[in-house]
Amino acid sequence: THGEGDWAPDTFAPEGFPDLLGKGAFWTNRIGAFLLIDTRDSIYIPTAGGYYKLEYYNVADWLGSDYTFEYWYLDLRQFITLRAPRKDILALRFQAQHAIGGPIPFYELATAGSEYTLRGYFDGRFRDRDMISVNMELRHNLWKIIDIHFFYDIGRVYENMFDEWRYIAN
Image 1 (cartoon, one colour):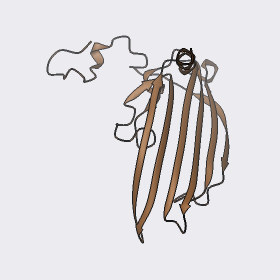
Image 2 (cartoon, one colour):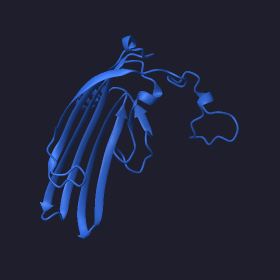
Image 3 (tube, helix red, strand yellow):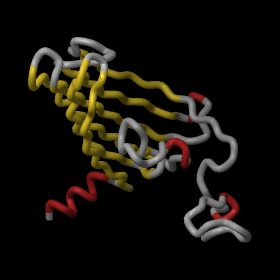
Image 4 (cartoon, helix red, strand yellow):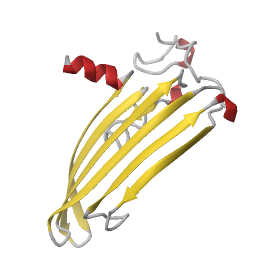
């Protein structure tokens, strides 16, 4: 549904969504942990190695939250030097986010769209409980400090990614 007046058909009109979860003020306090392995040769301009992170957090009412849910987040990055010294670098990234429980307020949903997931879409353009994205980038050093990058991004949000993949497998 859309609001009245001059709203464009694809414009978000909050009054058109009276049951939007998390529209008002709410608290989401969380506790969590992560495992991080970082073998990159540089955190600023990596040319080799990888960055691997598994993260878990729990939003619980006993922490003072208005909602109760859990999130798992996986971020895998690999950097491969194709031509040395620092001429061609292949950068690969896989991200997945999975929510358990709920309900989950709108601004806490997994998002796709940003410079880190799907370039060309504004931050948070796509939202749902689960998200998967893959980024591939070829970085080429043209001259001294001038680089050119070719990239391909693909991603999707899901209500439940495991149900979706079971459906595809069948």
